[in-house]
Image (cartoon, rainbow over all chains, first blue to last red):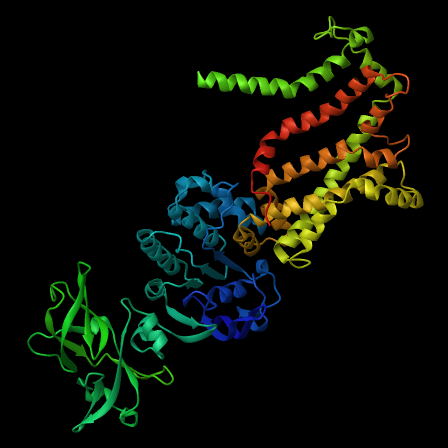
Length: 367
Length: 268
């Protein structure tokens, strides 16, 4: 059964149409990540679910009950905010206990619950302090603790990690995911960071300009994006797009690039592509599917000769920028596969993993 | 050396500002002879409290009580009404963009221009020379100031704190009580002090709108200026009585006063 059901939701800020008809069902216990660029409506959607914004059109149901007209306090939700939202004049203990007290939980239960939540988040030693005495990471733990202690039906996270530095963010990502596994609660998490979305989500809902562009399991979206936008949004470095047309090369279909390079499409991928011959398309290839051709080629790989323009080693991998078919592309190579700009290499392109995008609609026609 | 100079300058300036207060206290403790003696008596031989005793015996001291009643009651009322108005304007944009500016402009009206129309109204409603009349007037006159100041303090509170409380189970009233008030406590006290002091120091409204029953101390002081002679002893003793409550209030709330004023109160 869907724990949260949203139907035809619209939200306006004055004349600005922010959420444009969203339908979404989230099953109980799922960790859903709403992701998209700033201004795509993800935070507004979350705040409307919380009741901090009113829906202009459409319905929101939590646990089968329509909540459109309920104030936030009656929706049985807990929320973690980007700026922690801790009360500076209260000790950490009282901050965590705030929601329990507001809901008239018996005092005898409060102490046990606060301590259990503190233990779960390893902040027991901070309970007597004030927020100003804590570091950013500790503050965010407390903010999460304040939500966890509530035992709510639905947990909402509004970019909770974006104020933390990279290392801490990575650590907290794991913490929140572990928390979800332990509690098994329905959680909705908003972020603009595609890595957070990929690593944490059971399901990603990718929003663009107020509508859902695509939703599904992280790897489904990554491997089978429905549009050019999704393909480009997920993955870092981002997917390479090279202008191309499909041509019939003997008996086999090939992709021809701007400079005449022809890349053969493996037969397993050529089904249904016939009608697209001659139409302007984009060939989408992820950096990790470009490698230096050495020895025997893997089946489905096509090659082209090119020159390295830029080399960026990261340690484990090296990003090389090269020219393929007149377009700059990034290849994720083994650390020592390329050494210096100007080097001539033969590039192997894994055509089993490529996608083709119709430039007229930006939809993926083959993935 | 430099420090010593600065210290000396500070002491001089302080003495300069404290002198009138010192002189006021001294006069109130002197005998009539000492008051008029030349050269002036800087420190009376014995402190005598006769001037105060007279004020209490004649019942004049009750005017301080009257001031206290109207100033306190109007401060409480103005703070309560003003703060919830300010919250509404700050958080729900009640009245559109310019309501706050319109409200503060009310405060800029010179009291003298409205006091006579108000007097006529008060005669009609039977409010002249009553506590309620003065309390209502001071409340109305202070509201714009309270609304303007509190709006600034409330806008400074991160809205996520309130939203978090709403999600955690609070109603709007509870949010006001548990989040907004504690968050702008210093601002509340600072604003309350100024509101109180305005009502406490008012002369023109009290002069026109009171007769005998609720005369405030500021009006009472003028009664001691005669055409033949001035009763300096009574004037000074009454002035001291009028000064003490403000000293006490400010003394207790100094902590909040400084923080409140420096809290970014003025916000467009």
